[in-house]
Image (cartoon, rainbow, N blue to C red; front, side):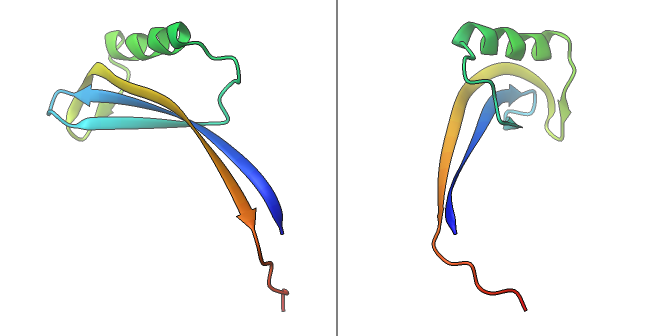
Length: 79
């Protein structure tokens, strides 16, 4: 039982096939700036590093840090 937290950085890109590709990065640095994130995302696009099932990534769509708090209310006994 107890409370735990989890942070994930989600980077969303447009693809050549017209879909969205999301890259999830656990435990991002606390002091990430918007400029750093955009630089990383643009480098991934220009260096053509990621290929998805709907083609290469072609543009930046979104970036967000998702912070989850888990309040575990019950830990059943282990048998």
